[in-house]
Length: 454
Image 1: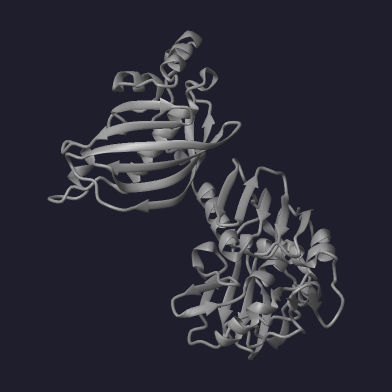
Image 2: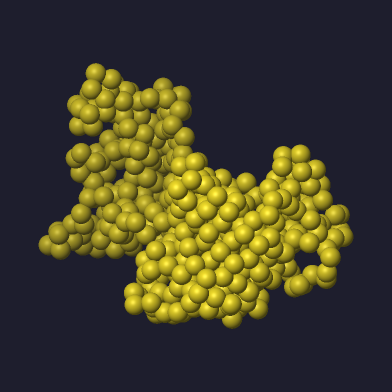
């Protein structure tokens, strides 16, 4: 990987048809100063507005990735962004006279030709790749996306349709060479039964067998033979690379994807961005500082605490404070009423004296939903800390999924917190939590966290 930022040596242009509009569009790539990143510029709009290729500007992910800022938008950005990542180009302006790049042949081949013609030049500023520090994971329906620490960008992907047809797997470590040889020529594809819906909704006015592969039953319809025996999964990897380019900097990590989509790709990018934006200490849900060295817990105390967490046990608040490092005003548990295997039940008595009620909200006190999420995370952490070797560690929050707040929690309510730890992998735990008041669910969430040394 290049150590210096790079931009284009000269301008280069290409004209073609837009996939969605079917209109003629001209795209010009221009050099840009260091730290500019990749930006789209709408030459056909007043003021020639620019949209940075950043995850914060994603507005839609239905079958392609769309960026928007103000009244300007750009559709189907993933293929051209993947090409910039593959060629390790950090800074460039992409001028367009319409709302989407030309689709070319449905792959990144034409964009590669443009970048090779433009050439690249190193710049004075250093590249600053982001290396994933801890694993991240998201799951939705049949889609699973994970990323693990790795010294380069590596992607291992499995793709298949809803019926399990054309299941393919491919794994590749991204370099300029593997990009040009193994990924850039893989074309977009769709299933024949989807075409009527796409046409009726105006989603592929520029679509044809010239720029897409169509799958009908067990047949593959294309104007030329498949470019790779596993072309479909390679195109999925191309899309992942383009969507993760929206992080705005090079990425090091091993992505493991099962049936990815643009929506899932962008959600993974947001998880990574959240990790990028805050140092590890600030990431933790369990926020109090680690105990001073002179107060470090000796092994006998750890074993004693583990004994408190046996099945069928219950804990009062003094016992809870021997296990969790939290203190006022951030201890969200008053009592653990039951421990049963991977399940635990706890209580939080919500009183009008809670400090957050002073501002949330004056004359209308409501317990913040994020503190209910915090309570779930603390209760889940107790299950992970029941092993003596884990005692004294801190549980760092990694992600929250399927979060729902259903009803407000007010002073006088007794908040019951039921948590089930349903996945443990080493020091990483994933738990499902439900908060209820008077047997009525008020909030729920799936939380993922990692145990770290204090």
